[in-house]
Length: 491
Image 1 (cartoon, rainbow, N blue to C red):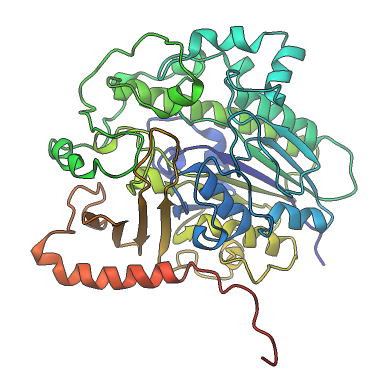
Image 2 (spheres, rainbow, N blue to C red):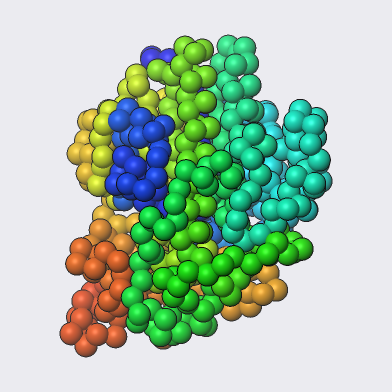
């Protein structure tokens, strides 16, 4: 049997798919991610199971759809005890497992109740701002190793968009520091390390030295047409963090720093913001992530572990970033929000320099990693391993006939009382979106309308297409429901 690989699982928070230079984004420098694409397989059409952190993370950590694991919301009181995380399976098989950064499978405002996650090393930091923390590990690093007071450090930076703390003190930098220490530990077993920085999640507060590398005026405007303002009014009853669309072409000055809770700064956009300043901050945060990822790759190379380490780079979901006049996230299914980056690299086994057009999902990651390690994939996992595709034994551009994304009262909180339920099915050509309990819906032909401007839902000429896609939509949703306990042999 070949030796089992180490696994470096790097998951950013709220990163869109179109943020990597090697995959077509010319306005951002990402040399490390470009290197990863050149030395692995990059998926052009990977999709999240939810636009919201907790259900998305529950899906890729269990290999199961929300309709089966029932972890639909941010702010859950607990994680279901019967759901098995893939990291626990690896720990049971002898892997040394560690986590740095977010987990976010339950409510994480002050601290997070851990499920049976399998992590021996657990360095937790849900978000970097110290307003709600109770001594989390990033804060401890700032106090004890960087000799700075976290409250004083972050006090001038509590704004929706503007320069943040210097890279030296940034949470993304802390993630790399802790990762390198874990990689350098002496051990006789393979390891799995989950790295989960908070960036590029809002607020948009990149280090000033990274902001200096970008000129907002030279960045492209978000996807927008004049008709978006009126069209988005139809969706005021749909739960989302942006209730009213604004014209992103109007340059506005950012407001002053206001004493507000971090949760509000990160999840409630102001009435006025500069879309290009937001985009510059967002891109700058990703550039910091790229530089810090390089440090980790260098540590793997320096310790002789790179060739036998699977590197997975992905995000839990995307960000609207001004498209159609909207920002942040919620029950919307535009590409910027549901379409995520996903790259696999394993020099000893996987193909290199492949850019796949296959439809893949977050639930496919867990079975892929188990198969790579020679471990059994539980029957309860609904994702499909990408192993044969990654190893070049199957067509690199075919995997699934469709992908599914769901939102079920997922944001929560006192300001979100709509309790919206919505679902999306995308087959690579047509995208159908159903807002359950509402008359409105969406139907897009992405081959001819990649910007998702022309909603065919109420188009009389597309009535037969709509009926056809609704049947396919129902079939796809039914396919996400678990079969439950196995049937008795002689029932």
